[in-house]
Amino acid sequence: MDIDLTSILIGITALSTFFIPIGMHQFSQWRKQSKTRNVFENAARNYGLKFDTSEILRDGTAIGIDIPNRMFLHLKSGNDTLIGLDDIQSCSFYKHQQKKRADDGSESQILIIGIQIVLKKSQTRKLNLPIFEGKEGFTFGDEERVTERWIKNIRSNLTAEEVVVEV
Image (cartoon, rainbow, N blue to C red):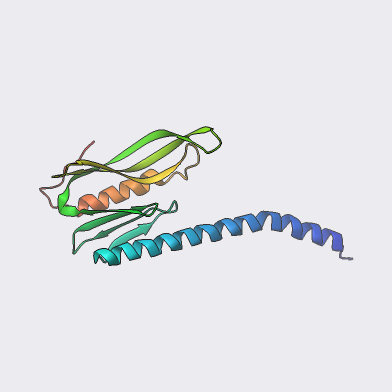
C-alpha cells in the first residue's frame, strides 16, 4: 500500500485548522484566569485576607469568602469590592439585560447575572455585583447555577439573625 504524501499533507492541514484555534483559545483563557488569580491574590494580601472559599470564573470574575475575618471579596475587571459578612442584611439573585453600544455603532443585548447584596447600614444600601456578563445567547448555561451556589455560600456564613431570604 502506497502512502500518498499529498493526502497526508491535506489531512494535517485540515486537522491543524481545527486544533490550532482551539489551542489558542484555551491558552488565552488560561492566561486570563492566571492574571485574574494574581490580581485577586494581591488584593487579598493587601486586605490581609486568606480565603477559605474562592473561585476564578471563566469571564474573569473572582470571588471569595474569608470565614475567620468574616469578609467577602468580589473582583471584576480589576475593580474589587470588599464587604464584611456582618454588614450584609440579605443577598439575592439578579438578572437583567442591558444594551451596549460597540465602537462601530452597533448595539447588542448584554445579559448580566449577579448577586444583589443589601447592606444593613450604608449610604448605598443595595450593591449589584455582576458575576457573569455576556451577549445574549452566548452563555454556557451554568451561570445561574454558579451564582446561586455563591449566594448559598454567602447566606450560610451569615449569622442566624442576619439571614433574610428574598424571593
